[in-house]
Image (cartoon, rainbow, N blue to C red; front, side, top):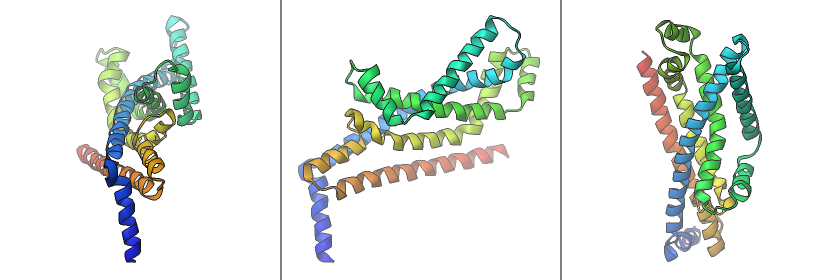
Length: 242
């Protein structure tokens, strides 16, 4: 028993203490959180725009008269459908590699490319979440807004979207948690994130157990912490409904 503990202690010192290797993990964690934060912001903005186009198309296209407005909305709705199909139908790691090696081949700013790639990927899932929230708002809300003299855009901005966001806020927070774990593949494009940090240490010390378990524990702690925050958010939203 003591020999096993001594071995774990020596492995811990080798992988984290010697030559300040813990700095790799701290630096990698910062990169992971930065990619996740900015990617989810891009995803929310992009996803909201796509959701508005998709929900508007679903509600207005069937009853619209032929004209430039119908053509424009039809094209925009079709492009959004293609975007959702392609992004949701292909692995995020492939999208990341296409972004790094093909689309942005002239750039070697891996963190920025990862933010853009994960943001575009997140946008597709956020779009469906927000679209479901918009469609869940009673049609009478739109009619009430129009009867007050608001245009369609004003009604969406001031009445529909705020209610939709309140309905889907917990789901958006969960998307942040999912995205946090998905960024673990950023090392495929030479980004020194948390997972890559563990890989670097493993390649230096030739010890797989400690670096990988350490990375797994950090992700677990982050997910548990953010899940707790989401739970508090959901309880507060439920309390505000009463």
